[in-house]
Length: 155
Image 1: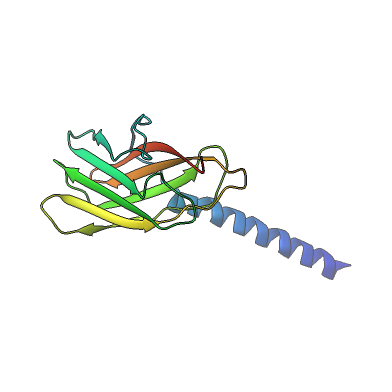
Image 2: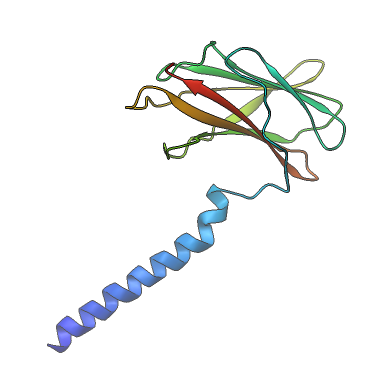
């Protein structure tokens, strides 16, 4: 009887430790931005979208091909003017349904302006049409800025 009780206590203790470690490490997977800009009304299915950053610089963000398809490689590009950028990631999340962690990091490309590119893909939604939010996370060294854009796939 005491062996079973000790085993049960050990299992509960292990579960509690896993829960605490998960809670402490969660911000690493989903860090909070310092500045969150409002949702853009630009449609990434139609064109590249331009937004102004808090420091006065500009970002042009695009996803190709258009319209944006699920289950195909997507080319992500973010170009910046008037601001220094250390790191760019794009968080691709379903607006109405959780579709799993999908946050590619864009790589810096050489050129006259700050340009970052990357590749991603979207899972297919069993309901057909799906609304997505692409949040561009820009690390300027002074702050992490979140710029959200919405688009629909499978129309």
